Length: 276
Image 1: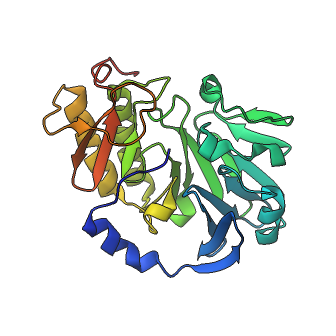
Image 2: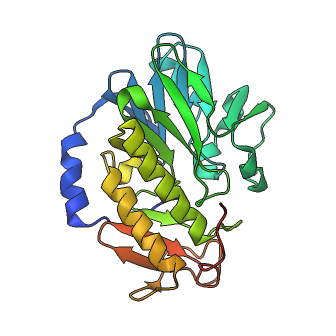
């Protein structure tokens, strides 16, 4: 979901290294910039994000944004390869344009989230460990519940990169949404993510709302999120404040920050047991 607040100065300064990405397409809804060889970021005017990754045989569109006219034709301007359309989760700012495609991939646990978008195509269900082979690169699916029950990440080991949607936020992660996932489950996801990054030597995290950052995150971000989640799971809410953003998910969302990371949570739910 969208960020409301600004990042700390350290994140803003760190973003400068990536601010000059080459814009290759732009219209009233979005702009597309080349991040690296065969990888593009799609940034919408309402601050949502999609990614296009091209291999020698196929390509992938990660998420579909909110409202972008003729998204299928726009993606076709970037790559002519057969296209996998994969949703990191089923929120409307990531699944809003699925109607332009014949089939989309999503984890079935997110079918509990209605988005109200007409879709006459076919859902393909993802599982933990599934692999998309694009030819010269493969993207592996891992389940990371927390933001939603079926949030996934996509690992490009060859590129040292991982695409995380909103699973770990974009500086702030929303964990107050319905259906709620226990804070302990989110901590477990952070622990799993940290381990995966070590094992597969991943150095770049491309999040679900790139326009707020203009750069990838790193493992230190996950460590900080894990530590903040551990505090909340243990009942330590010292320094928490009412969330000034929209009252989505619960009547009294709270937020707890630690430098560049923030968790928005439901104070009545944080100490529920997690899923192993």
